[in-house]
Image (cartoon, rainbow, N blue to C red; front, side, top):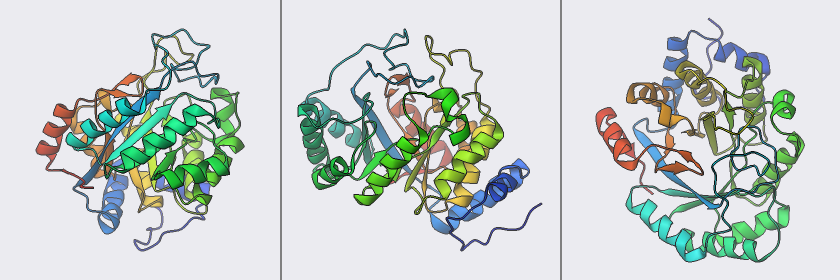
Length: 323
């Protein structure tokens, strides 16, 4: 077994070798160490419930190999333009009534453009924020000025996932670069908006690609406040439609390693949870996950129903985090 991580240590200068040593620990030892650190920095029974709504669906010009919203792939996703403000705010009210404290809005754009749609997004952010919900957006690349305008409207967080390691990135996406993603995260941080950034496992990446992604996230000038860990949900019509299901042990290793190297960060058990039973999800919570997305869809892929999550919380004696 490697050197013990000091519980009080929060650092942004992790090496890949250090992260690999953590990731490779015997899985029960890894879970125990992550659970110990989790309890130092967080209430281990509190889990934040989030809702993610697709406010503009499909027709995206990007070529992300996992994404059913890319215009170039033939999937069952129906394209729809930006929803009106009232529809989105009504959905946010319903999400809050169902126990969510964070409402996330996703738009299938390559980048935000300064047009009427963006004006409507700003109004959505303002009105949802007025409901006393954390508001998050994920809408592609954005400039520093756009980030400032979102902050002024009341945006709490911006999601822009790295997806995978810099080395493997070109195998999954060719229509934008890794640096494009990092530039957007920098613009978000400069605007004093919380950073939400994670990735997807099960894309065909190696163990070292997973470690590389965690290394990039944990060596940003400040750790992201939120790191979603997604398991690929293969969608027919995309290049990754035949990828095998990710093992729960791979998810646990990612979550536990992320918890150890980024102790205060919300680690979000995100896409792929629909394929997990309560026991598998319990292992993820034990390993340090403290947020989920609830509701029937995650953008366009199926997700766990609210009633099932309530039953899981009851069985595991977990508490939905209060706003």
